[in-house]
Image 1 (cartoon, rainbow, N blue to C red):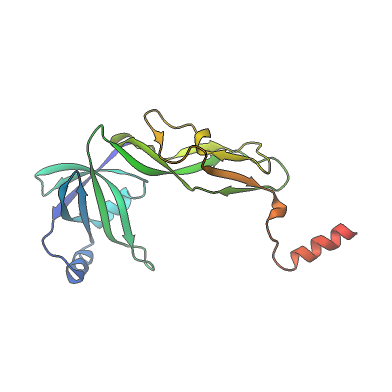
Image 2: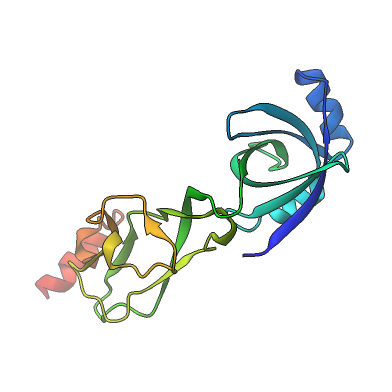
Length: 198
């Protein structure tokens, strides 16, 4: 996983008015916390931060006021519900070699067995414990040939070296459902019944 370098400034103004002024300047208010240190209030460049956050669990190398460098991962991101712009970000301070618990996206590859079965993502992300500087971007699971009733548990997923599960081993991540189990929209069910009778 690569580090994204972002320059940040400490901020001394707080409250809604200050946050609005920061956002008007195309910047984002944020807080850096962790390791028992006092929370550090920051102003971050909006565009750079938006690009960085496209990668889940991105490792951010913060250059704070041109004096100190800190490593952090995003812990909470607030976006405007309508326009989607960043309103605030909480960053967790991390150290090289330190283990952190994060959620990584679960991707699938392959085709289910024939028969119109449906794949349900019970967990879209998998909680894992991993080294802060080597967080996997995602895990990929093969669903090739799986039939209705099959399920993939957390323990069935191959994790990268140095990464362990932070969820019960028997937690269901994916399951294959029979197409008939889904309720058909009104009208479609009647057509299907007529076809069955004929």
